[in-house]
Image (cartoon, rainbow, N blue to C red; front, side):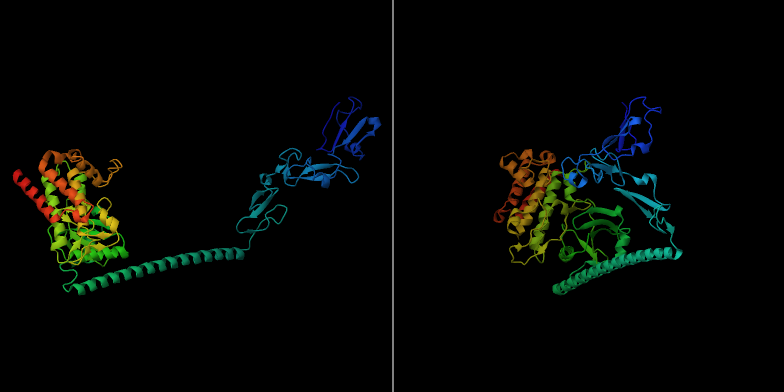
Length: 512
């Protein structure tokens, strides 16, 4: 028996081999299409049986409700005939495959044969495709449709002009936005400058002698020339308030010029504060303010230039060719104490510095100390015992009592000085992740060692070698007194300065 598929799922037949004098499996299609019966002999003389294939005995509407429904995805059901039950499954338009086997019929990518007209783009979509004419053409883009025809010149020009108009409108809108933003910033800056002048004028009237005293008002042109237009190669150091540049004035004077990062209310207050305070101070161990400039975008302060940087760098990044000797440490501590004593008791109006730390202690060409950075300093009344303020300062130097009560006293400056003493004694940073968690803060680290009578284990090697044992112990005890949490038990730094100065003088005499 042989079987041949003449066309998809419609008719099949069987025959006896050699029963007809024709090539095997070849029959006229009209013979097979003469009956609508299920199984019958079409022509007994030809010994041919015709089979009509179908599924079940129910039509599509009923069969689709059953769980045995055979048509898979992307196919549709076809009733076998009006008088005969059963159904067939065909792939939906735009799909191909076997509708009886999961997952059913799959999408045909019509774009493979490019059914779209020239100057159009074909895009395949499930069960179909779409054609889109290129820019400058009109139509449905299909070969069998209106295809794509070139737009009339007038329409093209219209489209171009519309696009240009839209683009120009957006550009003008952006330019207007940036212009308004610039105007707004300029007005805001102008108001800040006006406020600055008003503050300085008010202070000038209040002091009677003038806010600036000997402080000079520089022009922007002078300071730009002095710093080569604030060239990056002139940068000395960077701080929280701004950048410090090295400059040379027209008379040859070398100066340090601090350029504030930005002008906001907080910066404005600190700027005015530093000008007012430094204009009233005249002490060899306090940095000298030479002048300021208000005619630039960022206000500028001009100081005397101190070539040997900060005490922090001198301690923690020492130069092998110039070691920090014991005598120098004593001299530096004495100078800092002298500056504090002057600020608290000898100046015309008492001043609390509020940010004593080694980075704010500068060194001149002879390594003489200059206390700097008075941005958050405060003037106090003679009979005033403390200031109640928002806590400000540097972690590691901050007085714990001030941190807990927000009441700043002269003792708070002494506490910070005590931390600087520890840096001079140990050569270690106030806060260091290299120490254990318990000793991360230098104060607690030091107090633990001195409490265990193991002071030598924490001292700097240079101090151990060059410092007299009695002197070192005395300074360490003095540091401990400065770091006392209770203000009334803290060291009297006038006496502290005397004691350190006494050690320094003895050491200098013995070295001579």
